[in-house]
Image (cartoon, rainbow, N blue to C red; front, side, top):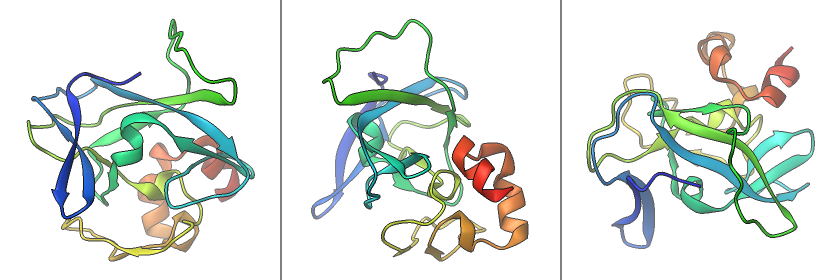
Length: 162
């Protein structure tokens, strides 16, 4: 359900991050988004529908936010994937590298493309040139910031934005 080129690493005291174990080319498969579905959003869930949030299993749970994402979601299931999941788990989307990723780099995504409003706001420390500073969710972005993310939006965020 995820690439063998990913690892969870402790990057600070009790702070885990998903990193590349080796160089990864743009477009390479990274992981599926799967897990239990809930109506309640938490700091770890990913919004996949109206009042529908998946509590991710696997590597996505350890992928931190960056305003300059290294990944992108493909908003459909991969073909010919037959994972063994618990009855209350589902596979939703999958993730690929949005650019070449070097060995040791954190694997990140922009939470603003999946979260209309995050469950817990937080200060961003990504260091990107266009870092937003505080992450609150897509609905709090300026119209210009929203437009920049338009092509990467999840289906539910596209629907809510319209």
